[in-house]
Structures are given as C-alpha cells and as structure tokens.
Image 1: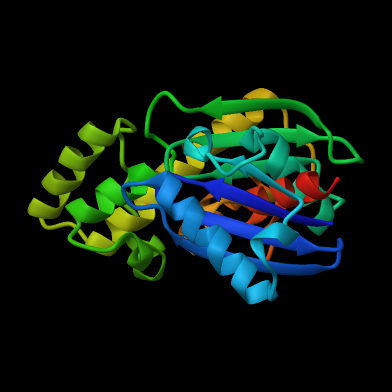
Image 2 (image 1 turned 180 degrees about the horizontal axis):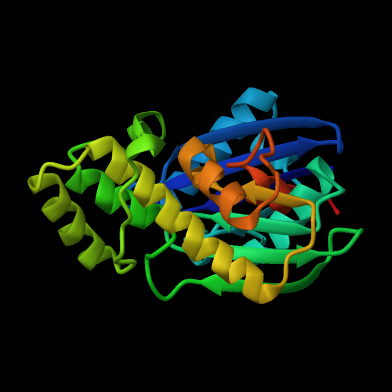
Length: 253
C-alpha cells in the first residue's frame, strides 16, 4: 500500500508519502497562485524521492484550503480529521490540538484513539492566523520568519486591535511614536496567543495540548500560547506536516 496525503494551504503546500505503512517521505513548497499546480509538483517530488512510479500509488487524499482544486485526489478530507489522525500517531497522549494556519485557526478535542470529539474554528476573520502575522510583519518592514527572534518581552507593547486592518494601522502608529519595534512584536505574539487561547477555553481544554501548523514554528507565539493557557504545549517535530501525515495515513487505511 502506498498512500499520499496532500495538505494544500493558502501559503504552503505539504505532502507526505507512506510506503507499506513504514517508510515516510515528505515535501513542502509554496502554494503560489495555483493549488492544483503545487499539488502536482508535490506528487512528482514525493514519487521521485521514494523511487516509485505513478502507477505504484494506491490512493491520494487531499486536505487544506485548496483541497477542492486537486483533480488528482481520490478523496478530500477535512483538516480537522487529518490533524487529529496525524497527531494521534505522533503524540497519542494529546487530547487537545491547536492548529494555526495561514487563513484560519482551529482547536480540536480528541479521544484516546485520535477520533474528533469536538472542535472550534476561526475562519471568518484573519485575527489569530498566519495571515494576521504576515500583514503585521509587512507593516514592520520584516519577513514573517524574522518575528520570533526579534521579540523583546521586556518592552512588550499591547496590541489592542485584533482586526488585521486596524492592527496594521495601530502598529504603524506605534512605530511612528518611537516605541520599541521588538516590543511591538512581543505584543503581536501575545495578541495571537490571547485570541486562540480564548477560543480553546470556550471549547474546553483537556491536556495534553499539541500545537500544529506553520505558525507553531514561531517561538513567540508558542510562548504566548503557553502563558495564556498556563500549561506546557507539545510541538510535534512534524508540526507543519500533521495534516498531510493524517491524510496519508487515512489513504493507506
């Protein structure tokens, strides 16, 4: 059995190939303007690195923001189910998953077998998502990947606006007034932590908690979430690939 899982996000596309439920291969690349083209490139790269042929692939399952555009997929599955499945393999002790992607943030409660019990999602506004960080990083004249190392908690400045448009204006005004840019960044991380942790508390938190998605790479947001929830948070080594891994596992099953 050879299964491929694709997680086509708004910013990055991830792919995982599982061969005989043992060997894993993974790839990540920018989604760009065409989710379908990104998916095709992922499939080609995964097959090449695994030393296989296209005819060797048993099934391809797709999830993520751009999943409906993937004509090569045998089936599309929700991100909720895929992240739950992926985390259950990496960290079976986890009962709550926080996933922050480019366009939405999710909190998922799972049982001991990795099945979804309940979930909450913010997909109506960019607040508390990767997009929120991207827009505000641009306002600061930085790349989003630079934010984590630049924060200065000792000079933290509160960001009051959670709307992306208003937050961008607020940050521009703060910088113009001469406050510490690195303190603004710490406040930015804290505002994301507050927004997502509030959603998690409304759903009801069960430890242990895992943080997945591209934003999980950002140490500042990880810190803020841990502080707001007053507990330790597990960051899977494959935090960006949990959705694709879950899709690949389901394809093999």
